[in-house]
Image: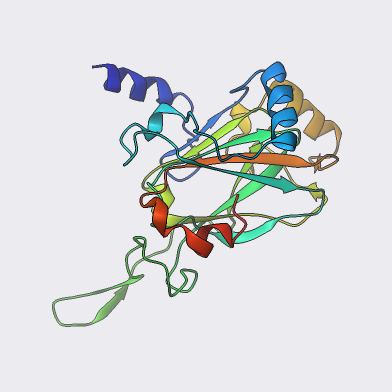
Length: 234
């Protein structure tokens, strides 16, 4: 009963205009908590035990056991990528100090790296009983799903989106053409954020460094190696 109640409560945060199972919670932490975290990440590592969201309760360790801290200066981004099978398929990202747009794209056979061992979408063609190939129509969307991550917000990605999409951040100084029809979580943004974007010509100027705290549960901690620590991830 409690699990069902929590699931229903989370539904209000689901991004309806994005792939299923992506959730956005604005003001997940308070301004005071944000200041404390900003001070903390500057003076200590993230190697201490972590207390993650309850969505990790079914993961191998019952909670997040890995936190990655990244800085994105104005103009910096990261190419579309996936987190992979080394992790339980839940990733929670808290944004601090700045805002930017995260782009979500469907995985395709060509976009999935050869070493990837996570599940991938079905072949874009299917065979009839006669062996004839019949194309399956792609999703009716020509551009990535765009999610604006505000300071103090939490973005939660679970299955099936975890395994069927890629995520990346454009390397720009300003996110442009931001409207209710181009930003998947537009209705979940604060009114002050929407008003500022409109006043700035549908733009989000990346005037400050955005810091992300990304929580995951590594399935086999000993298997991390350079595969995890050798790559920058959102």
